[in-house]
Image (tube, rainbow, N blue to C red; front, side, top):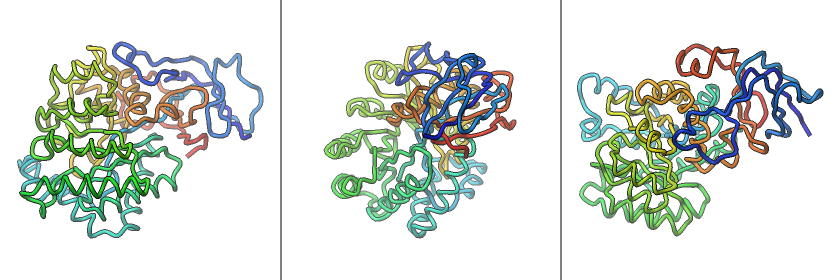
Length: 409
C-alpha cells in the first residue's frame, strides 16, 4: 500500500459527503485549518488537524500553509475537435453574430467539415494536448462531448478518441454522444430524417460499443426542437443513456422542461432562463449549469445563477471549452467570470466547479470533494491569503502541485 501524507495545510477546503450543495449551502467551503491529508493507493484515506496527523508515510509533502482543495470538475466540454476557428473570431469582431456565422457555413458545421477531414490519430493527438492543458490548470474530472461529426462514422470516431483519452490519462472522463448538435448541410429541409439517423443509428451504435455515458441535444432556436429532443431522449433511454441538455442559450427554448421530463442529469447554458425554468428546476433533481465562458466570448447574457442560488437551487459552472464560443478550459478563469458577471461569491463559485460539477456528470461518488474513499484528485496551492484570492487574481500563478489519483502530475 502506497501512502502519501500532505502536512501543514493552511486550509483544507471542500470537505463534504453530500452529493451536491444547494442554495445557502453553496456559500460554505467546509474548511479545516492547519490540517493534514493522507492518501493511500490513490484515494483519500484520512484527514484532520495537524495534532492528529500520522507520523510516517512513504512520501511526505509539506504544504507550507497552502490550500488543499478538490481538483476542478468540468462538466461540459467539447475538447475533441480539429483545427481552430480563429477566422470566426475575426468575423465576430467585424460584427457578425453567432447565428449569422452559422448560416454562412461557419460554427458547428465548420468544425464538422474539419473533423471529417482529420484522421483519428491526428484528432486524438490534438485532443490529448487540450486535455493535458486543462489537467495542468487543475481539472481532474471532465465531461467530453462528440457533436462535431454529424455522421455516424464521424460521431463514432470522436467517441473512440474520447475512449482512448479515458484509457491513456489519469483524469476521470465522462463521454457524451451529441449527434444532435446541428443539422448537417446534406439534411437541410430534412431535419426529421437526421433525427431518425441519430435515434436509429448513432444511439444504438454508440451503446453497442459502450462509447457513451450520456446523451445530449442542442435544444434551441435554429437547432433542435422540443419535439426532436423528446424523440431523441426517448430513444436514448432504451439504452440507459441519461440526458445532459444544451438549453436556452439563444432563446427560451423549452429545453429545460423537456430535460426535466426525461430526468436529465443537467441542463446547460441557460442564458435565457427565466422564473418558470427556476421553478421547474426546484421540483427536480436536475443540475442547472452555467457556462460563463460562452457568455464572455460571445458577449451574450449570462445564466441567472445568482437568482437560482437565492431560490435554493444547486448550480454548477463549467467551461464549455470549444473552438467557436468558449476557447478556454482554465476553470480558475471560469470561476472568476462566475464571480464577476454572475455575481456568485468565491465560495459559491468554488462549490459550483467542484462538488456540484461532479454531480452534473454523475461523478460525485468518486470526486468533487474531500471525503474518505474518493479519488485523491487534488490541487495544492502556494500560500495564498484567502479562497477569494483564487478567482480575484485569476492569472497570478497559484498552483504548487496537482494530484490525480494520488500521483503528482
